[in-house]
Amino acid sequence: MLTMRSVRDYLTESGQVSLGDIALHFESSPEAARQVLDQWVAKGKVRRTEPSGGCAKAGASCCCASKPQEVYEWTGDGNPLRS
Image (tube, rainbow, N blue to C red; front, side):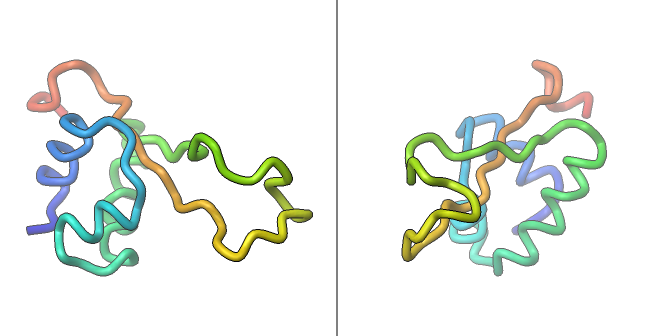
């Protein structure tokens, strides 16, 4: 089930995770996963990061067929149970 707690636990176990992987893991839409992630971002416990690798011309000049996915990582303290 996609809840703030379940997303927190998944991120602390997995490290950096793409939005698509989070949605797939919880069998939800990317939009629903993003809503939960946005709540954690607002609390300062999760940050959106740039995916490693990908196009060298990232940005407006990129002509890749698929743009990099949003990637999120847990940045909260070492004990997620206190968050």
